[in-house]
Image 1 (cartoon, helix red, strand yellow):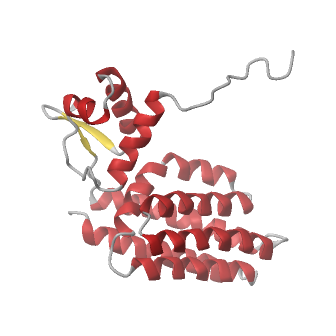
Image 2: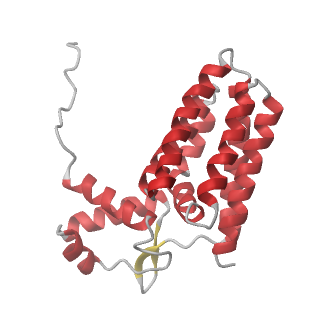
Length: 223
């Protein structure tokens, strides 16, 4: 078989993909808040796309867990309960802590720490400039790098299934007072422990970071 014969060449994103990006950003930036109705006709006008595109995008966002369909109301921005948020943070906390420990035990832990520090510099820049999109995107990259460097690809696959729910919660916590300083500092403690090859400290620092984020989120989410 000729190499590349099945490759699909694309120069730009499709209209559906661009619309999906716009809707994700609108939800994560709190333009559409939890519980807000997502009326197809209004979205068609705002996005300047057809109803079929809007419906397809809403179905995709429903599968990601950030849109839900309510009987007699239609699509709304998903509302996470405190119980659901706790479960997400529980899964995230333990798996991230294992990944942090794995990075500290990596044969080249200082190089892993250097790569994570580079991501943290971009996250700090995002906070300094008020660029929430940058913070969310680079934070996701930080954790992907940490999971893969620790050799925990399966754990990353599990976390990835919750990616948009995690990102939605993260969009809430990064906007809380003091998080611009506290969030990056908590993450730098994780990286410092990795650099020192201290697996137990990396595990504890990672768990503490997630527990703090959970506390902030639960303070905002209705019971």
